[in-house]
Image 1 (cartoon, rainbow, N blue to C red):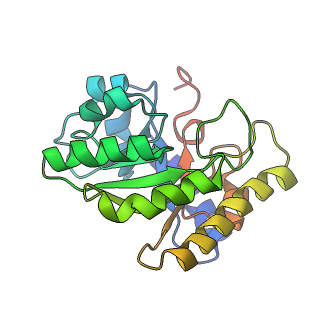
Image 2 (image 1 turned 90 degrees about the vertical axis):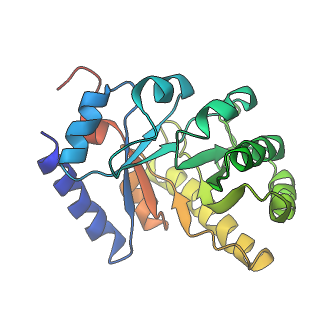
Length: 224
């Protein structure tokens, strides 16, 4: 069902990235596990979910080769529930949350890959670090948090933004990553997760290494 759509998107991503590796994450929120398994049959092996409750209802730890990332805002009191079920938490936006994840991962002998979320548009309603001072304070503590591994950064473009404004937000994340590599050479910041169904081609032009597409793959809920 999804093979043609996924193949087309991968071709578009490859053209836009000009040879750079860019991962396609399928955002499967609100879609049932049957839909996800159809996408797996079509070759899609990376999925993102926004809510802990949906992850608990739809997924087990035995996922037949595909990877699952938590990409939505994560409350500290739900960390213990989600850590055993996901392969990465991509929305870490506080030192407190990072510590909770590290402790929960260590308790089950796991090192949890994370992405740190940056609010590059400074929109009040959005999650993510607004203060770079707080962000760098987290990075100062990372070496003491043995249950997590920082793989990179994540951001969202502005709601309804035009190309110029949106690309500025993505460029800001790229610049923060570059500065972070200089300050913390032991961290690679390989993953820059930015770009959704409406702006992923702009994100790729600004250096995204992972795009998060929902409606571009699955359509709006109930369309298929």
